[in-house]
Image (cartoon, rainbow, N blue to C red; front, top):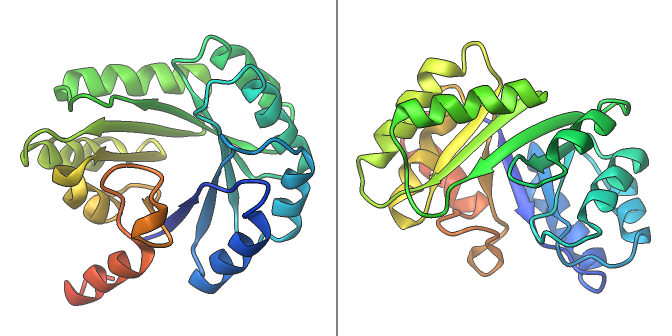
Length: 216
């Protein structure tokens, strides 16, 4: 199953127009990066406009991040992404389990792609913390890192709902191919000007590549 999660960075000001652009792209899921939102009413606007499962993510490490993620769960978000490096990760995951939401336990290594042994250890931690979906993201510093990630997905996605890829220009192949190796979904942006992470393809480009490769 090849699913695309459209990742967006709304602000209080841009949210209304962004909702319309999202709808026109017809993604399978939408990740709302809440880092720049200040109004809690924005969460209600997002939920009312949803046409597919929506994910709440906050990487700003603000004091209010924990409260914002819990509010997103209470207001009707389907999936909440919790970075396992945060000091409140274990506690907030337990609190989220009270709500009818799925939890993504995630880890991001912005510097490198470690060997498979390290990836397995991260996966085990995420599962132990209660992640319904485990997300392991690295950074590609060489082309072979794509093979490390794709091999990891192929081996462990059969028993674990897994999202994994390598960031950066050299990691594009892992983003494009990860769903075909068993990943739950891969991320894309609306256009090149609205990337939420390094190396992220636009949803139109991703679909075009899949079409040209005749794999979707």
